[in-house]
Amino acid sequence: MEKRKKLPPFKILSTTAILGYGFPESSFKKGLSKKPDLIAADAGSTDPGPYYLGSGKSFTNRTAVKRDLRLMIKAGVERNIPVIIGSAGGSGARPHLEWCLDIVRDIAREENLHFKLGIAEADIPKETVLTALKNGQVSSLPFVPPLTPAVVEESENIVAQMGVEPFIKLLEAGAQVIVAGRSYDPAVFAALPIWRGYDPGLALHLGKILECAAIAATPGSGSDCAFGTLTEDSFILEALSSERKFTPESAAAHTLYEKSDPYHLPGPGGSIDLTGCKFEDLGQGRVRVSGSRFIPTDGYWLKLEAVRLAGYRSISVAGVRDPIMIDQIDDILKAVEVRVRDILGKDSEGSQIYFHVYGKNGVMGELEPVKKTRSHELGIVIEVVAPTQAEADAVLALTRSALLHYGYEGRIATAGNLAFPFSPSDVAMGKVYEFSIYHLMEVSDPAFFPVRIEEL
Amino acid sequence: MKTKGKRSIMKVARVIRSKNSGPYELTLDIMFKDRRYYELFKKKKLITADKIAALYGVDKAAVLKIIYFEPSQAIKVTLKRKIPSGTPGDTDIYGAQQHAPLLNIKF
Image 1: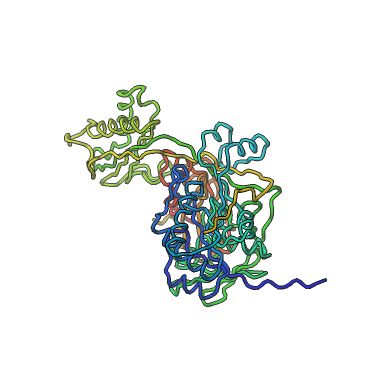
Image 2: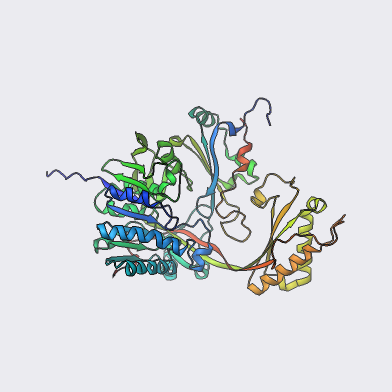
């Protein structure tokens, strides 16, 4: 039998935790001097909440994203190193992807760079989800209500986190720079090495750490590069600035971050099993990780994400310093809502009124174990969510004025109950979205995401 | 506040934090300074679903899992969010400031 050729070390330069969070040029240059085989960054998260997916807007700033991308693309194209970006524009639906592609085209023009741009779309048509639902190919994640056809119909910007397969398809087609819609974070780092024959468990685990760049180092930073070297049986992590280093503790601790089970990290097509994983200190701020395994699932499941419109929001911010009022704050707020609903009647039926009372339970709400505030002042955000902006504005205005002049028990400060820091006091915040789909969907072809090549 | 010689978890934990694990879950991490205390908490089962449910005033069914993670000398607890991140009525989109009740654990 012919002896298989040993794979050379595969080196990955991860620039930043989220594209647009920035990185020092010195770290980037140091990474380039190590001759990476891949420059990549993840651009997305659901962390900033449902608004960004629904509105089609990026939670990162265009100037900042352009700065990061310019450095990455210029270095990559000039040195013939593939550059891969996933979850473009933060949420990775079509408007986010187009936003990011527009920046890439700008850079190519400005820098006179010519390359094959690979594009992968993550949008999933409603019909695809409805068919999967009918065929029993949709399953709920913990605490997520079962999906119904009605919810699919109400949802906007349905995306799925793509795995490595669409990236590999684009690499096969000769893409030098890839910009993809919503992606499984590790896929941008793992696709190329998996395509070249490296172990998927190690490649994906390395990707899982590199997607947060230097956050997994100590001291952690979301705005600095990290470097990974993948071999056949392990991978090595190192930081690229003298300020920070990787330690077995920092690398292992990162495995806990934002996930519910650090031993089993589920993703498209399977999960990374870390039960046999070892983190070893190699000195000089380097850590070797081994033993991570990829366990394919029965069938290939993708995670779907979508949101629906929940209404329109208006808010007002005010402070309270009166101790007599603070003492009765819960009763006062309840009474104000009753009064508002009494005055508006049917006109307030579709509206939800929330009082975020900082200094009391503004941060934890019902979960707050301290029931009685000892604060000498309270900050109140009055929030109204209604079916239209006009209704939200109207209910907020009345709630604000009712609270301002409410005659509570024992009141001696009769000129007004609220200190407003701003004029105008009321802000119309526009559309409010909520997550509606956060489910798994089974697909027969993991590379079914539409891909294309654009020559720049 | 010391009660009957009991110690605060803050003396032995290096990290106590909360964060979303997706929009529907809140995950709590306790990392110990010393393996000794990690082993003690693990052996004596000092963190239980009942205890977490009581600290947060939620139903026990809202506690999804408690996992001991050797490589970090850490305990991870995952809870159901009261409402999904960003749904009207939410108070902490990232879930990053929901850890304070854990600071009251005594052992």
